Length: 410
Image 1 (tube, rainbow, N blue to C red):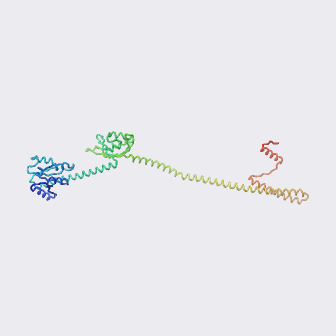
Image 2 (image 1 turned 45 degrees about the vertical axis):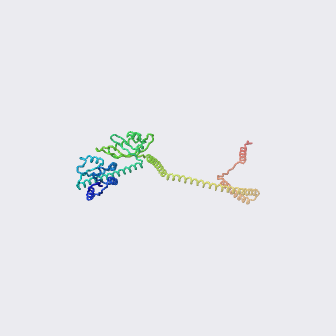
Image 3 (image 1 turned 90 degrees about the horizontal axis):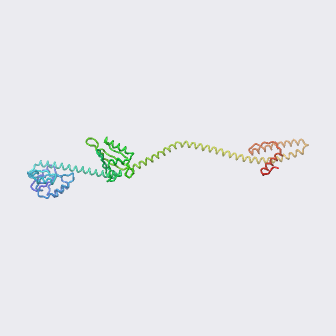
């Protein structure tokens, strides 16, 4: 933007710059220049007569509110001898406007072009710096969003003084509030006794080698409760190569570790059950075979007992039948033998009849012997015959009857 209200300076400057390849425009006054600056102008060329008696406050305020990356370049066209070294007013103007370069008139086109190229190059670097700052800011916002979403805390440890700086979230992972004291000594004292040696060894390894600091350990809160934290850090080295500080993040993993420990316990129980099941399966076939043999033995014994029972029942039935037949047959034989005996007594004088009667008695006696054997079979015992004194048998039967009736023998 070129602001030169008098003469042909504005026209000459615009033509020179356009011929060089720059986009140059004339502006009517300081308000228009301020508007163009806010839109995104890269450079302003101002003749000193345009600002000598003008109100520079709006332009000065806009320039004062520039972001840190911006330093808007201004080329101030002065008359010969009007530079800041001889003109105090020009010096005050430079102080007010900031990044000002003075160019005495009449100027050579090459000189103007060179100044403009330098100023535009500087302005482009400013915009590049703005882009990088925006990228960094966006990265910072994304990082902060990720830290917030992941419930991460940030920390840094100055190795020289062992000074610990921890964010509010990081302090919360160790049970400390924003205003509670929390030094490296406090952190070390809070670590669970079973994990303290491992944590100190990991810190020493990072300080000695510069490797990343990665560890999970338990810490005891002031209220006595135990919590797990995941702490990760990266070593930053000084110019000498030694580690000067460790910067990292922390997160509370109590829920995950509790779930992992519970899962390990359940897996252990499941493994024990599987081992027991394997042992049971290994002996199951043997036990099935043993039990099958026992059952077969029991079945065989039961079948044998049943066979004996059936046989006993058969024999009992046959015995009952045989006994009945024998009794009936014996009664018939007694009648026959009795009649034959009477016939023999009556036919004493008839030898032939005696022989016939003796033959019939022998047959009847053999039939009687057969009935005795049948009765013996029916009783399932051997029946032995022999002679006995009838009087003695009757006396014995009487004594047995008296004892059974509770009477004394007479």
